[in-house]
Length: 267
Image 1 (tube, rainbow, N blue to C red):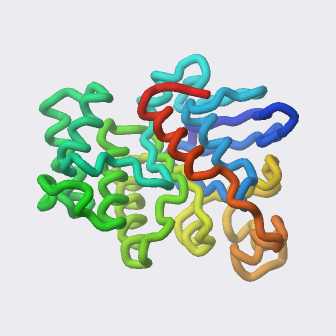
Image 2: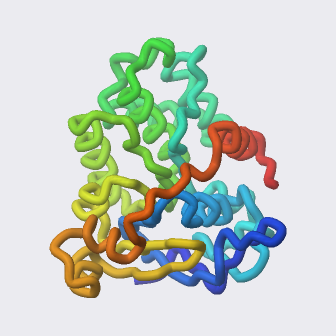
Image 3: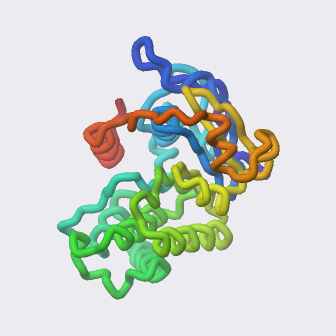
């Protein structure tokens, strides 16, 4: 199976601070891959480099055969993304949010309309297509964001803590949609989460990052065997420790990141 993401000796420094320190990993085409770590471990910085929002200080990334630094437009067409924080326009209807995204990605009109109906039906929102997003619950918004991220037929779906704050029923439904799409369309799923049971149940492989370095990777069972623990959560705690970490990026930083992505800019 070919690698759709390849990361070699990737480093990101902010002045004297090294946020990501010479990491290497790969993700296979069609794989569901979890990227785990405590707050401030380097997860978000790595995802920003993979998705063209930050340029690396050193190292190399290949995403769907393209370089995010020198071929950012091609890379962006290769992935969809669901941010941790809401990114929909609340003053537009669900259908208008989907239509706007499809136009931005130059999806041909007939195909775009077919795809919108297909995906909104999949996430059980077609009957609410004409409702304003500000009337939606958190779970409904998250489902719409997933549908929107899939509209342009991406090869990879990035999900940055996509189920944070969702109830267990909505989380379960969301992963059912994504696993079905992974099987039916072969889409690669790259996600971060703090819910260890979610990663244990869904991910085919896991990489754990801490203090900017990949400290372990493998299946959940392999990580448990390596640490001689009985659960992925216990393995994670044994590898990363029990010290409570700071939240890391502020809400302002996260909002700025989303605006950069929507506007096509990079820091």
